[in-house]
Every structure is written in structure tokens, then in C-alpha cells.
Length: 113
Length: 113
Image: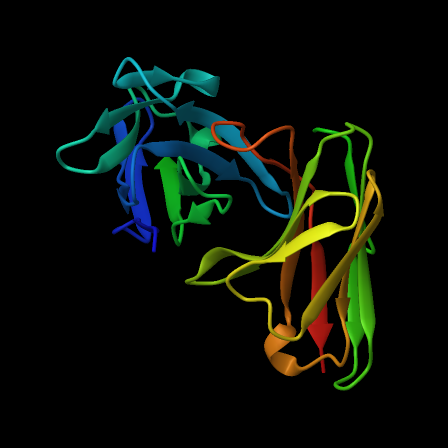
């Protein structure tokens, strides 16, 4: 069975500092990996994905994520955090032979001025 | 937002009553999904559809049924609502499987008293 772990329930950073939101996964075969963001009372919005190729993936709003196959990780990063980045972030994985997208439990990012 | 409309946005119902949630898309995407979101669990897949009248179970399908009679509509039915089904329900769509991201509606908040 595939699974996703987001080890931090909450990440606190100061505005202007770099941020990292951690994600590790377990899946059979090569993974399709995704990051989503959720603002209050809204659905999830797609940020970026990894399918194959370059391990550093760039996405929306200045976010990027680094795929590390040996560590089975796909951490979300941003060089300089904004207060408006404060939201709930979800990592998700799908195996290349499967239909189901499995989500992690989510990490709340708080960016303080 | 992708053309996804969920209705109703909020509903309060009593234990034992039937409830139907509707998802309507204008994107003509093949795949449609129902997820529930609960604190500490992230999003969990209830059912999904890969075409008209083609559906399959997700990881938390007990107590739920679905129907898809048209490409644009995907209905989720709770035959006899229970308090454990109090949750926020999200519909999502995708064009294809694999590396295609899901696009989410804004959710339905269901409270079963």
C-alpha cells in the first residue's frame, strides 16, 4: 500500500526566511508526487508535481520541491516566505500503476511578519 | 478555479437520514473523485469514477455510494447518515491518470447530528 508522511503538523517561519515543508512517501514503482495548498474554506490548489526528470521541480507562487529517490522524500521549499503563504499544505503520491492519489495528513505553515 | 461546483456548500442533517451531495464539472474531464477531509487524516478517497457509469471504491467507501449518469455530474449518497460521516467532502476531477493533477471543488461541509 502506498503512503505519505508529513512529519510536522505545523511549521513556523519569519517572513523573508526560507521555508521547508517535509514529505516522505512509500509507493510501488516510480512515483508521481504532488504538492497542494489549501486556504480557509477552499478546496486544494495544485502547486507542483514531479513525474520524471530533473529532481528540482518549480511550481506556482515561487515554490519548488526536491525529489530524492534514495530518501523517498519530496520536500517543499521556498527561498523567501511571505505572510500570504500561510496555509495548509498537502503532499500526495500516486504509483505509476495505480489509480489512487494518497495524501499526507497536511502541514500548517505559519509565516509571521 | 477549474469549473467544479459542489452543492450544497453546507448541510446539517439528522442521523439515519439519506443525504446526496452533488458535484458538477464543466471541464469534460474523464475522472471524478470524492474525498473526505478530517483533522489528522488529510484527505481520504471515498469513491472515484473513470467514466459514465464506471465507478470504483476508495479506501473509506463503507456507508457511501456514488453514481455518474453523465460526464459532468458525480453524486455521492450517504444512505443513512451517521455522526462519523460529519466531515468536509471534496469533489475533484482530472483529465487523465498518472501525472495529471487533480482539481478540487470548494467542498461541502456536512454535519450529522
